[in-house]
Every structure is written in structure tokens, then in C-alpha cells.
Image (cartoon, rainbow, N blue to C red; front, top):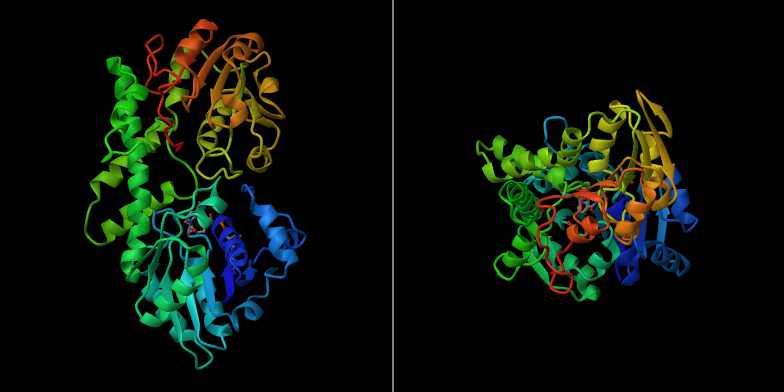
Length: 455
Ligand code: NAD
């Protein structure tokens, strides 16, 4: 059992802390946000993730996890301090490392015994070397502090599962001492561990994320061409998926990737390459395709309609993917302002993301347009002139083509997640536009459709 402190209680830090506690370690989670800390102490998770709140309560009740803003108390006698603070994108595309630097300084000034500092946050290659030097420079007590890299690969929406059943744990260390401690911390998880040096570990994270982002952009690029030449992207993806070198996952076409990782990590790797005098042409292309893709349905609808002004527009899904309340880089954030600018009357539904969206766009008038949040799919669709599907939530997928026909004033649907069968929509007399699929063309049958992993 190790005494672990975790800095930052977002998607990465809180989930890691809770899972370490679940594995028997003694964990203190530190955050600068006092409201969050009080919420967590009262047993409520500040973020929506399946199973998280239950595990928080269970481990809090057994005394294996605690929450605090008092970093000195948490860091001073910790065996390991994990960093899960944010590394958002700066205006120039580089990663903002200010929170990492703040925690590094706090650790240096607090630790009173030998301690392993483990960077879980996604940081550019070489950052861990700097963090170690920075800590040595500001160290107050005569103790040994080393830094290890342990990038995180969880996906929001399945973060707890992904942590407890990770496909691999990457550990990047420079000494046997650091490697031994980190392996011992992860020993109770019984997961495959890949042990490399720090810089390789940092690069594994970026190379993996950027590869996945590229895969999405590649399929979206092909989908756009499919539309022009009369091919069907789902049939194409199915045919591709049998090739094990390609794999069956992440082949869905849609309105582009969002979230807190792919957009900023592609930008950060592009920036890192440029800084080193190299141009990563593939990653750059992936970024460009994604930028265009986010508004591809809005552009289609603009070509179809004379105006959005005065139209009731149903928006189904606000979060960047199902299973999370996270809106970062979600297509909704790109499209809804465009709809409001054009004077649409937007009725938005999202099972968990509406409160967060309303913080950015409170209910009411925004320029020429109005936004209202509703509690169910039906209320959004009622009397709507047009509908956009941005997130493939279960309740949206379960909405039948007949419902669109019955409830909408004009059943005109733009689906950014390809969740409906083109033929069924046609039979229900719904004018249906999706990504990379020709209306009226034969679709992959339900029985034979491959289970592509959602992006
Ligand atoms: P987040 O923004 O959800 O959470 C960061 C937390 O850190 C916030 O609660 C903030 O209050 C806290 N914080 C800021 N400064 C602090 C300080 N000095 N001390 C203690 N807490 C502090 O971030 P996230 O989504 O969990 O991402 C964290 C890192 O992990 C990023 O580098 C991200 O790229 C990476 N990552 C994220 C995911 C993901 O799916 N979200 C997956 C893999 C990796």
C-alpha cells in the first residue's frame, strides 16, 4: 500500500485517485477549487462518469480516499504525487504548462521525504526533464525527488472502466528506483506494463492520440468523397474493417472529433514538430479536415434552406460524445452560434450536458436567435422545421424515424453521427442527410453491420 497524492481532480486525476484507492492505496486528492473539494467530500462527483460516484462514496467511507485544497499536508509525506492537472492549448497551439509548473513548485516546497512525482497529464516531449530540474531547483528539504511519466489513455464516458481495465500502462522512468515504485503502485491492477524512458513515454501518448485523430479525419475525408461519387461510407468501413492491419474500431464517419484531448494534442504535436524544425504533414492534414468537418452539416442545411431565421431548430446532443457532460470542442459549440446568428429558434436536448451548455449560452435571446433547453427528445422535435443530431446518446438513437415524421413540422434531419438507417428514414418520409451516405442507396443491413467503436 502506498501513500499517494493526486494533484487535480478532473477526468484524469479524480478517476486515477479513486481507482488507486479501490486498489488499496491511501489517496489524497488535491484541487484548488474549494467548491469541488466540498462537493467531493459530500460524496458527489463534480463530473459525470459511469460508476465514479459510487466508487468515490465506497472508498471515502472506508477512509482510503480524501479530498483537500491543502496541498502541503497532502504532498509532504506522500510516496508518490501524481499530476493530473490540465494542459490546455495556448493561442499558438502549444501546451499551456502553467498548472504543471505550479504543482511542481508546490511539491518542491512541501515534500519532506523521498518522493516520486508522476506526470499523468499530457505534456510535450521533454517536459518531464524540465519538471524534475524545476523541482530540484526549488526543493526545500534534503530529499530525493524523481519524476516519472505515466500518460493516461482513458476515454471520457468510460473512464473508470478504462482505468481499471486499461489495455496497457505506460511508465517512463530514468532510474530503477522510479520504475520499481511505479510498477509496485500498479501491481494490484494486474495490467500489462510497458516500461520505457521518459521521453518515449511522453511521445507514446501524443503519437497514440494523434493517430486516432488522424484515423477519424481520414474516414471523414473518405466519407465526403463517398457522397460525391455515390459510395456508402458504412459499406466502405465495413469492407475495410476485416483487414486486421486496419482494425474495426474508429472507422465511423461523422462531424469530426472534439473533446479535451484530440484537438489540443494534435495542435501540440504539430507545434512541437515545428519547434524542432520539422513539419508533421499528416497531423496537419488531420487537423485541417477536422476543422472543415465540424460545420459540414450546417453548410449542407444552408444550401437546402433559404434562411434559418424564424425556424425552430431541434438540436439533439450537446456534449462532444455520449457518456460525458464535457463540452470541450464539441460540434454543438461550433454550430449553435452559427444557428443563433442566423436567427434560429434553437430547442436543445442533452441528457447531461445542458447545464454546462447553459453556462456559455444561457436560455434566451443571443443576437437574433433564441435558445431553449428541453428535457426530452420529443420536446425538441415538436413542431421543429429542422433537426441536427450532434451526439449519439442512447435516447436519440432510440428515437424512431416515425417520431421525426409525427412530431416535426417539416421532417428534415441532419445527422452528424450516422445513427439512422437511410432506407427506414426514407420509408418514414423523413428527409434525411447524414455523412458519406447517399439517400436511397442500399445500406449495411443491421444484422451484418460491424460494431464500429464510437468516436
Ligand atoms: P480537467 O480540466 O478536467 O481537470 C484539471 C483539474 O486540475 C481541475 O479540477 C483544476 O481545478 C485542477 N487544478 C488546476 N491547478 C491545480 C493545482 N495547482 N493543484 C491542484 N489542482 C489543480 O483536466 P482533465 O481532462 O482531467 O485532463 C488533465 C490532463 O490529462 C490533461 O493534460 C489532459 O490532456 C490529460 N488527459 C485527459 C484525458 C481526458 O479524457 N480528459 C485523457 C487522457 C489524458
